[in-house]
Image 1 (cartoon, rainbow, N blue to C red):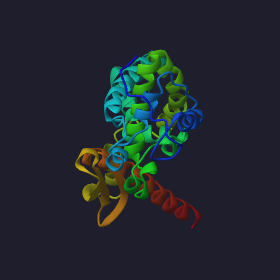
Image 2 (image 1 turned 45 degrees about the vertical axis):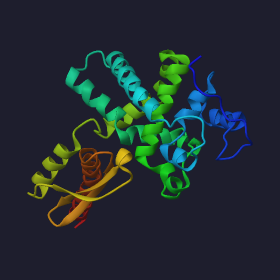
Image 3 (image 1 turned 180 degrees about the vertical axis):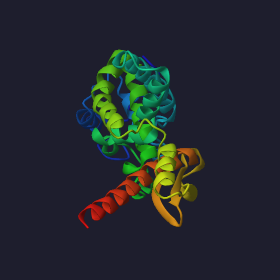
Length: 259
């Protein structure tokens, strides 16, 4: 026993989640928890508690902290065996790409985790079920809950099938490389301009703030990114700008070849 409070037994609904409600979420996620309170905590966003002060459990932030550490360990071990000849620096780059906010949010979308979350009305109205920070945090919390409930072997069984195609995507699209360096190299080589980054906005409470950063080349904003830090948002903006700049250059090349 983990000493958690029992799940409320009221009728199914967003204000009173019960066992039937949780079973539906387990079916969506393809998981079966022995301690249902762990699952409930993993799916409970802070905004839900703000609007439901009588709710018996805490939000998912402590589980998010644990899940982050579990994912770091699992990812390092997995990559160590997956690429036995790869250098430490390259392994570190791939691990960083796998566990960054955008990647974990992408995995959360693949398992429809957003639909399973308990959110406050304001957070939901603001698109919380699709927000990268919310999805990433919930994915980490789910991993932390699964670890406490069933151990590392269950985490491996859950995460490994998700990671394998994600690694292929990361390698195919060079997502393990520093996007700001790649953008600078391409921009300087093709346009003779060094990109710069500007903060376009921020949102959310202090404990879960998200920043919006634009990657600017000359006078044009080529990319925009969102992240839980300005650095993460700048990297996302650089990736977006890389895609835009490559499309622009390929279009010019195609036009030149056809002329």
